[in-house]
Image (cartoon, rainbow over all chains, first blue to last red; front, side, top):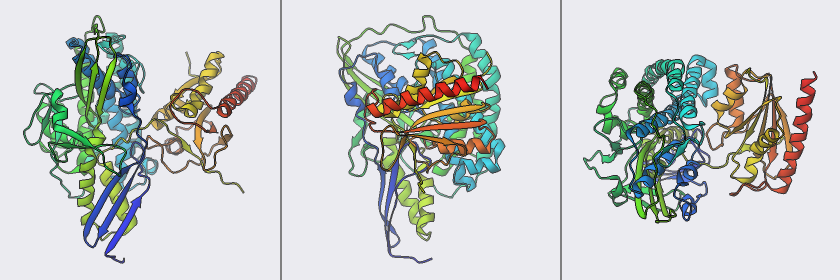
Length: 432
Length: 153
């Protein structure tokens, strides 16, 4: 292997991430001189197109930002609009929202753990080759994804871009018997699958690599944060959701169509590692014990072990869904009235990939005057680049192809969602 | 009600013009009250595709396609084994990979027929470009014939 003093390479299309992005890495001697996570999907101007729309529309419009985490967009939008209008929904509606959100966590984490991330640890180029040798595990992953989708369909009306959510609650509350049947036939077996998943991924080989990022997650002393919480940081900071934009500042960078965010002036990480580290104490006893048995302490600084944290959250989301169903009383009515009011409202929830913030200004006639959306992946870009810089520098002895592969793994640790609106079958016609 | 042995899956985003060609075909068949097949609109997510076509005798997939030099509305008909391209789908797993994964897990339908329509316009909006709209007519007519022939087999 030759060792050149300067190298520059580009991964033009990152695989096994949500959306389309590229990576540029510049190396001079033993130093990585430039890392650019290049998100080149065109911006979609959702914040602009929300202006002048009706105040009840953002949950459905913003759900379209992502096919993987539409519930997160719906929930943050509902919270922000209800906040602007000075309305609080009932505890029963909040619990049903949490239940719906559990479905999204299960579905999204199962997708990432099995189909996108696990092949990295077992040395396969994709889940297809993994399935050839580990059929039972691949089937288990698909079953978990299906379980999440089934919960989304029952509570949300459909798995992708649910239609049952409205500002103030739900158009229809599911019947107790429907949920009990789902719990018995789908979620109970899924809990066993999730525990087996955790055991499986805990045995993967993990590079010895830790990064002490500043962390941001919602926090709640009563429960693991999903559909609500107060932003907290690993430096001991805590602030109300309405102060989010005082602490989180987004700036444009030339190499990305997604904004880069900073927390009080520095890079930071949101998502499962942050959520787990800041909220380990509020996991359910089952999930906490499963995490301990999987070798996780109360914090996790190794981004490669994020797959273990996601598996813990899979256990938790199913356990929590079962608990919510056991205590379920259909909210009646299924939604509360939210009359339009002149005001500004803020909402933040924990999307599978981290904190998702929405802010809306609404006038008395119910017209959206301005909108602001801060998604998790934009917040994590600077930290992903920092991981890449550190990890690549340790592995400069690898040839370009191998180094590129390792860098892709570093990116996939954070499950970036380079969100998407169109998807094409890329077709190559070989004419002879 | 028993599961239909045939499914028509329209993949795409109906809010991105020609990307919605698959859902447009499915909606047309639904409007014509076609009952000989299950009709499904999909965002193309691989695991859901597996669920939809598993155990079917025939799965028909209609999707928009990118080609280096597009001829809008041109229809490509692909039979198994379907050679998928590299994975650059927005969901990390494209139709080609879904087919290969289904193959590994024994979850392929007995026959998979893919209609891939070359797209012209993929900006915001619900209207198909004229050439792609004509391809919807053509595919719907072909599927009508195919389903009729299947019934009289």
